[in-house]
Length: 115
Image (tube, rainbow, N blue to C red; front, side, top):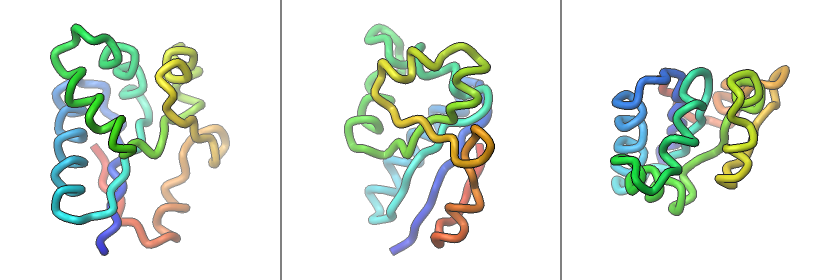
């Protein structure tokens, strides 16, 4: 089974939509897929959590299907969305000096794709 981790760094909303769409597409194709939210993209979590946001339904599908590996704790704290991420129930990852280690995923045989 193909294992793919999608790392989202870009804080632009349309880029994040493609992360979400690709996660669902890959899952539908039988891949083991997970999403890591890093960098500026952590700011999108509180926005997408709002029911009235146009991408909320897509975000919620990815969330309810358990496709989020987690959110960078360091970036969430620095960009002042840590509390909002915790409220969303998304895991916080800080296994590399407060950030997310790509090396761990590579060691575990994941293909890393960055957005």
